[in-house]
Length: 394
Ligand SMILES: Cc1ncc(COP(=O)(O)O)c(C=O)c1O
Image 1 (tube, protein in one colour):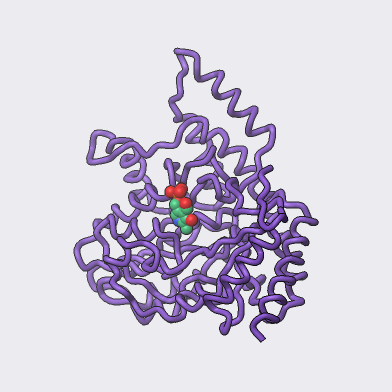
Image 2: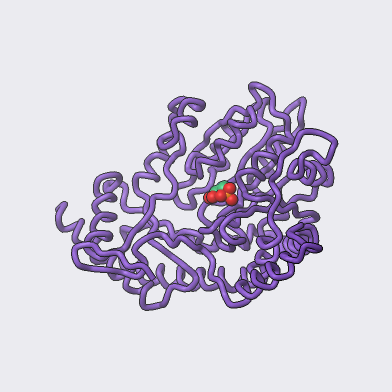
């Protein structure tokens, strides 16, 4: 394990973990077995059989009719949006606090990205603000379940059906569940609600297929057929490219999927313990625990008090790193503040709630194989640092 040295201190969880899942001998044995079988010139690496097995298991897990494996969530999202054939002026609403790639997909597919406010408590898009921005040109609402907590799907479904476009009907609900594989959105595991749900199995994610990979779930038979053609050069019917998952990835995905709930349960247990300890600091806003949905804590979000936004939040992060060797990330600031392409497209929107939230946010590391004592020492360090920053600013 790599250790971080800051002012002579070190901590086992100095940075956000590069591997979000845990791996066992079963994944390693699976790689070796599939590799050995594939080097036979009569077998090779064609993925079909493993791909179908992984897709079937994934759709069954989510309770979705179909699952289509991709080489990543970014390309999968591009192709889901492509299916809508967005025309100039067609709008896609998405929360400002987000992964930049999610918004780049909308721009790349010719949509007009309409950024909306995110709720400070959940970091998910604020349904009231979505409703205030919906227009006759809204083709989709792109819902990122931020950091593992599902957004309010009931409210968003209701808003979309109450405000249909005269031409296209209700906006499609596209869910970006890259960070929420295995979370419960109130009706069961994420993946069965909305028009399409996109998952990522990139290295840092809740489950990973050897570092890259993605999946789309949907009930829509035509979207499924189109996504299958698009990942494989259009199957002699239309444009497409190569977005396929490899055989080794699909085989390991099957093992990781079987272990997903236990990895998520480990995260949930650690997060609840962390919240119990940090409740000693009433000035910290902790992640919400129960809203009829199951958070899987891809990240553990903390908010410092409003008056600490910006500079004092940065002091907390610096002291955690320098004094205790504990890293943290701000995940994620409004995308137009960090990505010039999104800024150019979206201009400089006025989203004061999301900007203020990002200035208070920090996420210390959490991982399913973190020990209780590491988790507790992170809490002790946070309490210590918060006290020292408060003392210095009094
Ligand atoms: C919210 C979100 N959406 C999409 C992606 C893109 O996923 P991928 O790396 O599989 O393309 C990521 C992370 O990588 C993400 O965090």
